[in-house]
Length: 492
Ligand code: NAD
Image (cartoon, rainbow, N blue to C red):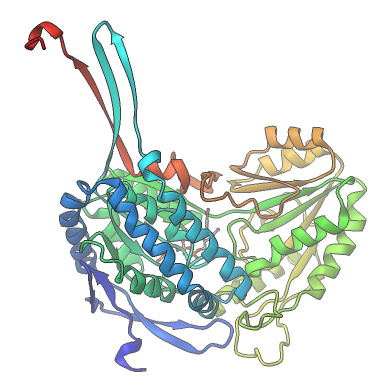
């Protein structure tokens, strides 16, 4: 491996070697080929980035919003020009298929587009004559330095839920990608380098826990957006909130889909298979439990078992492949152990994806789609995030029972219903305790102009990522009450 394969941080408009004591190999999960080495940056690197961002903030916040968004218009063009190369990079380091990689990049670009509307979105409110001759206005001002700490499963999209809004609102920013998939952001920052942004407005720091802790404790960093597993989200939220920072932390999930007997079987099967097995089940909005109601059980069980068996698994760079590997050998082992745990707790492994024999993919971290049938709703596996291509089937008699079951869970990221009944759909939308709801939709991912609304242990904070919520998160309100009496000044 040459020096060029060791990634660098991007701080104050320059590529710099990290002050790292350790490095990790970045691996292609489909082939076990080493792609690069990522530095585990120190607190010193975070401090440099935070200081550069703090210095840049002084002039960036005074740059008119109409000028700030010009850099984002340029970034959109560059992202579109490099779209295929970025998609291939996502597939190579993360394992998902090219179609899935293109999909996440598309959502990243949509967030850039929406953030270009900041001159409208960032406006405040006002009211004349709150009392006689007195007016009141509310203006939004940027916070200062903000940062994002990202997970491995959407290396091209998740930083874009936050970063474009943050800088368009006048903040300066630090991105800390997942150390498992640092290459996509490395390439995005090569594009950032071409934008002509003032130095220090956008910074990239690679690393893991040491860098994260330094971000959580740094006095210059005012706000942090975290996305990852629930235990780490809870830790990050608590530590940074105790330091007085504004926080939004998106955590893990265990997403249920309910299938009523009146649902269109073909559509439901196709959509729920895509949800459970797309991105090898490594989506925070992946269907993880299918709850069949009444007569839906038998027909759905047969159909989803067939869909699981038929799924084409392999290297995501092959356009024919429908599902790639999971991220690491450790993930594969954990998923296989959880399948066994389900069996030990009484479930039947109806389709078993463990130890697949995939010609040409012998070195990769593959688990084929797996179906656990007759999962006990009270078993641990019914409530554990597997984060792999495993769908648990649970059967109940009524919609009320199904809703009670999903509301008893710890997480609240997404819940979906498949039905042709408007009344059932309305009841579900009204009663289900999850922040993202799908009705005849398998992955209810909010568009860039809606908030990504996790609930319960899937989210810690108040304001979510994307759209208007992001604008509110990255600004602080200032209220001005004004009295200007005419008899105080010269009359004209
Ligand atoms: P993770 O929690 O292991 O890592 C996320 C980030 O936290 C990484 O940048 C990592 O470097 C850092 N980190 C990890 N351990 C840490 C520690 N002990 N102290 C400080 N920092 C630490 O998550 P992951 O495995 O990369 O991602 C998968 C998880 O993310 C799943 O649980 C998934 O549900 C969740 N996720 C949630 C959403 C959502 O919108 N709710 C979206 C995507 C992923």
